[in-house]
Image (cartoon, rainbow, N blue to C red):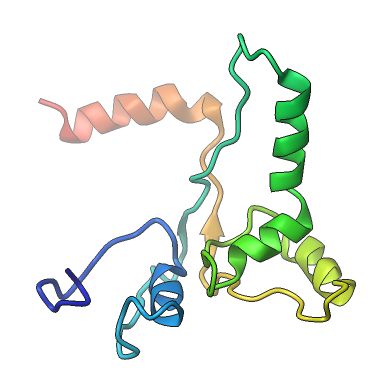
Length: 135
């Protein structure tokens, strides 16, 4: 709808979504991104193993691969997905420097990521939310 100009603004959890869509030919090159200068919550991906999984060891292998610098660098490539890595920039810089194909990594987020509040804050946040916005 954004590409068809039915919308002037689209919201995404991926700060690189527009750049990836432009790179993949799904958005016009004039599309622009906006982000809050002070940052935004960005921990939106979770990997888990169900308590009753029949192949827990295999699931751990898959999760370890998905969290590897190589897999995260590929995920960040705007020609593929363009989603920011969950790893630190230092880890990814090391991977880029030591990447066998010499291509390094692409598509890193230019926006400040703010970690989610500690779970111990949940009750206080819910109470304050209800006080301000609840009925």
